[in-house]
Length: 133
Image 1 (tube, one colour):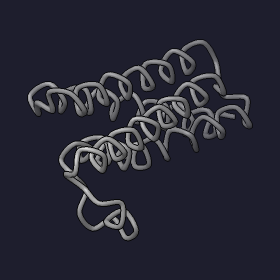
Image 2: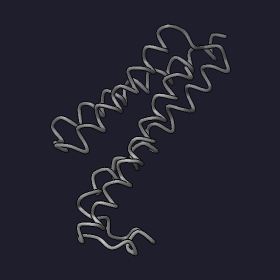
Image 3: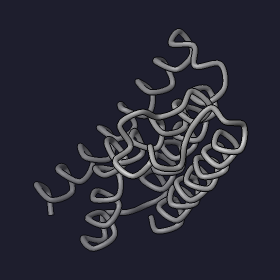
Image 4: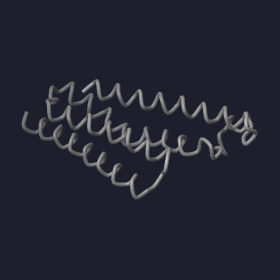
């Protein structure tokens, strides 16, 4: 259960790197000023999608990390939960790719919904494990 969490953390690290690079490029291109990042009220278009996607990584994925730790600590983790966890992380990578490239909702939304239901399945399994244990 820990490896999928690590894989998700590296997605977040990559997004932070990409965000920083895009912001630096925007400042160098003259489409943004370094001062505007002080309070970050006006994200430049060059980095807006990455900024928004990065915020997404602290919404559903917060519940993912909590359930992974809970499954691990209660020994409720198994091959099925590991598969669900990896599938959730894969959905986050694909969702991020679509979000920061084409940003087409007709592609992005089904990917998000898939991850949402994978996460619900992890929480249901934890609940069943605790109820039956």
